[in-house]
Length: 436
Image (cartoon, rainbow, N blue to C red; front, side, top):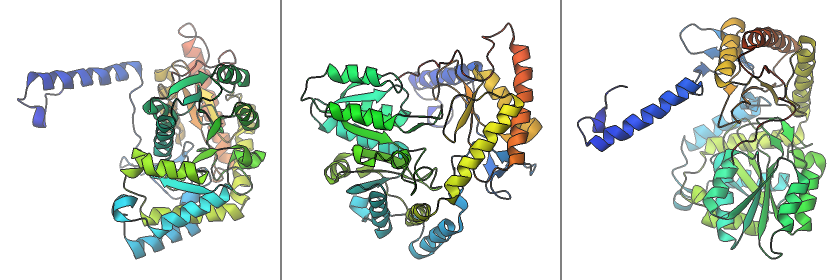
């Protein structure tokens, strides 16, 4: 361990002990193969789906793990809107909306989002994580006696918000309608309850049964809270998500979404009844005490939302890219996890094994895919999370499939006798449960 620096040098022994404890924790991550290595890169280089590795080599690789699902971060309308707002309004927003004022571009973005989702009101946050955390934390704490029923594979932002609310929580098995029904049935009839779930679970790529979940919630008088983070912009005839695609928007109470993925920008939002939105606006610390979105970012988000309301071409291209990659995987013998969405995860159990396969893809095949490990996914269910975009060509898909297939065959051969023998595909058709 390096000697203590700065304020810790020559300080109280307790400070050095604390630093040593943290360093030991980092060492444990390294030994387990879970230490997070950031790949420094430059976008665009020369344009999607390529990125340049920022190591001085000038090497350009194909990016398969960007959440810029539709390539909207580079869309001319979006770039032009951000550039114009930057020139007119400067870089920052000046502070929180309560103190520095609420920029008209943010209000226009909220109005657009509310109209898109056929809801009374919307509220924009600086990230999708904060949108979930702040909203669930506020609602769970303000509704006296509230019970929040949460899918076991909900995102960490939802889990943090639910825990932070100190409301009673009940975890139902993933997409298990009967288990949800059992939990709701056991509650006193007049206790406020919120059922929280996602439309697309980003680490598995599967859909939630939205219509059925909403029907069960309605039967027991529960509010519904839907996370559309990975569907916003990318699904529905106007980009209003899976709920719009299924025609169930009128069955939902609150919908959360991201401006940083399908819309290609930054920020998050919730839409819902005016009373709920105003309650979150008035009480959520994660909203009240956070500097608001800069005008240029709000302008970019607004331009992206408006474009995708009137254009299906990006969503159609995303669907084609997903089909193309699935076909390439089938030809190469790569078995992705069961997924009907645009996200195609491939299991490579073992944190170190998964990291090694990803590193070899980068070094030997000029393909960038990040390994996903605990706590993002359960131990033993490490994976490569692959996200095709409209910019990926059939040749890109074929190169990924063939390169990954070769590495997985080699990995499976070297792993025989040292693991459970699974190098990709579902482990016995099920995954270990994530901690909630």
